[in-house]
Length: 297
Ligand code: G3P
Ligand code: MG
Image (cartoon, rainbow, N blue to C red):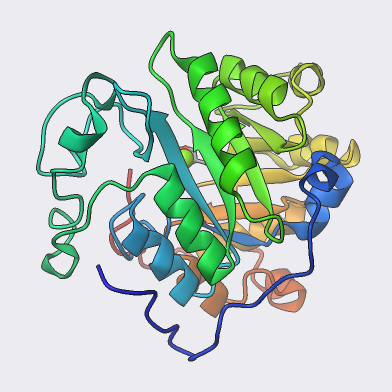
C-alpha cells in the first residue's frame, strides 16, 4: 500500500507532549490519557483487521488509540495476527507459530476483506510501530501466544517496544496470558500493562497487583454496574471489548468504564460516545438500532 494518505478532514497528525512511558504504569495516570473509544484490531469493520491499512483507517476515523494483536512466528518475529492460524484473514493456511516470517508475508492479508485491500501483508510489530509513530496514534498491544510461548512473547514484545516505540506516544501492553505479562514486566517494567479477563474474577485486584498491571480489560457482555464501580473505585482504568453499539457504549461509559474497544469507532463517535451530555441522554438500549455492518467475531 502507498503512503499515509490523508485523513478525511485533511488534518495532520497531532504531536503530543513528551510522555514518559513509566508514568502510565500508574493506574490514575493511565486513566487520564485513555480515550473513550479505541479502534479494535485497527478498525476491524472498516478495513482488514491487524493490517497497516486497518491502523491507517483507524487514524482516518480519528482514533487516538488502536488495539491490535501480536504473536510470534516460528522464527521469532512479532507479527500482527489475532487467530493462531492464518486461514481466516489471509489466502494462506497454517499456524503462525509454525511458519517463518517470509512465508507468512507471502500471503495476501487484505483481499479476503475486499478487493480494495488486495496486496496487504501481515505486518510486523516494527512496521506497525513505525506507522503509528508517523501518524501519532497510541497503542494497546495485545499479546497472543500458543501454549509454551507466553514468556518468550512477552519478552520479545517488551524489548521491541523499548527499542522502537516513540517516547511521545502512549503504549499499553495487555494479555490474557499472565506469563506473557510477567515476562514483559521483567524485561520492561516501565511499559504499562493491562490484564485481560473474559469475566472479571473475584480476585481481580490480587491478580493485577501481582503483575503490576495498571489497567483491567474485560468482555463488556459480562460487565455489570457493580463490578465496574468496584474496579473504578480502586482507581484502575477499565477497558471493555468489543462494543459496536452506541447505546451500549453510552451505558458502559455511564457506569464508569474508561474506554471501549470498537470495530466501528466512527459510528460510536457520530453518536456522541465520549461526549458526557450525549451519554446521559442515550443511556438506554435502542431496539431499533441496526447492527453495525461487518462486525467481526
Ligand atoms: O484487547 C481487547 C480484545 O481485542 C480482546 O479480545 O479476541 O478481540 O483479541 P480479542
Ligand atoms: Mg485483541
